[in-house]
Length: 137
Image (cartoon, rainbow, N blue to C red; front, side, top):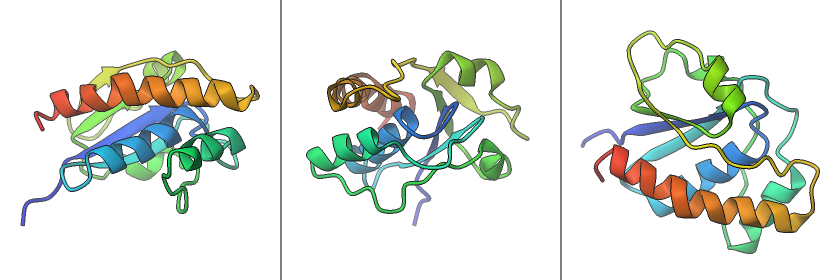
């Protein structure tokens, strides 16, 4: 059985954008790719707005929690997607070369649910197809 390509979605706090992207990629590309997310300075929990925005479209959020990017430095990563400028600038050097793309999204942290929904929809519209194309799925 072939191993699924792994996508690391990276932002600063790993509490909003990258968490929503992880859930969306895992849902839309189930069986073709595996997404994980991390932050360069992870928060203590996933933002309530991110959880609500994902639950609103029927995606489970069990198991989502902020992780430090160092957890994945020695794991086989096929693609890194940075979703904020800060993460792009501070993205660590992986032991072997890893292809990366940068797709920045607005940070909805501390804003109303409508902002999280708008960012969720933008991620779904732009990031999922970009991952599909980058991995040639």
